[in-house]
Image (cartoon, rainbow, N blue to C red; front, side, top):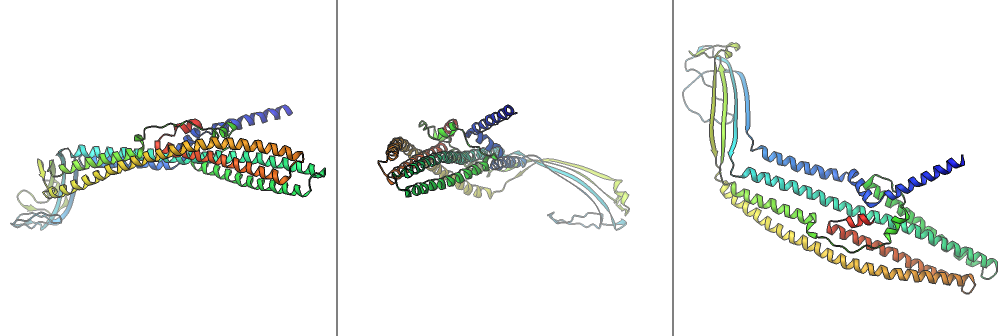
Length: 451
């Protein structure tokens, strides 16, 4: 029975270790891509852009309209002329009525018009729509980099608080050892008993800080779960060790940043819109066609029947095929104004491109300088931390021998505590700078490989 329990515990330990090792940054990013709803919103934006593209092309397809009318009307006729406008009722009949004064009418028609020659407007509309689709894809890519930045920062904070948790545990053990030594020395009469109270107070203070760090660690897990929908486990020592290891300073071509590419796509669309305005002054040449089927209760000799079935006795079928041209001369003036408008927007876009690119380059230059300084500062901080730790061990040995008092040892321990805290904070600052640099470079591969 005991063997089975031990085997089960070993298997559970291996499973836990596997799970914690599996929660690296790349794994969390894949979970985020599959779960975080923000990506669904971006996909919907791409679909909307595609739908707009389809809508733009529909107007160049044949436009077909059909109607069927059957109704009762009077048929009194007269000579004259009229202008057929929407809302005008057109009724024709013989001047001299024979038979009934009203009859049933039947009218069925279908018409079609198709842009036969559009002078390149259709092709330009298609290119403009494609440019908008590409822009929405770049926006999705920029959104992904933004989420990568947030996810990586939260993961690094999670590692930071985990390292801090281990570090406070270590300091708690140090204060516990000081308390144990103080009790032994007080029992031997070497130091006053009040020193044990001072050591206990220092231990409680560290334990209080430890509880606060554990609360922040749990909070960091919750923030990561917002993206991944996965409970975070405490990572293995190798993952925490990666937090304390610096990486090389690499740089990629910042021209590939989605923010710059989005501006270029906007410029491409504006250029196409400007070209389209030059085509708007040209006419529309359309292929026209129509079919009509008409009958009424009036016979060919002019006799008017009032019975409904009489409308099916005598049909008149007609067709119409032709070419039409429409030309709005006002477009000549409006097109010139719109063309100037898009030209100014294009010029403004080029200025924005340069501004965004210069801002990215400046940010990268600043980050590279800060990262180099942070790395040098960490190297010096590591030396300071080791020296403070060596000093503490020496002072602790002297305290055990009764050569110094407790206040001196606690003062050295406080210096060590502050030095190590500053050392870990320097690592956190270094990694945040690396995250910002990865975003500006639009490349998180180095951080994903490291963590």
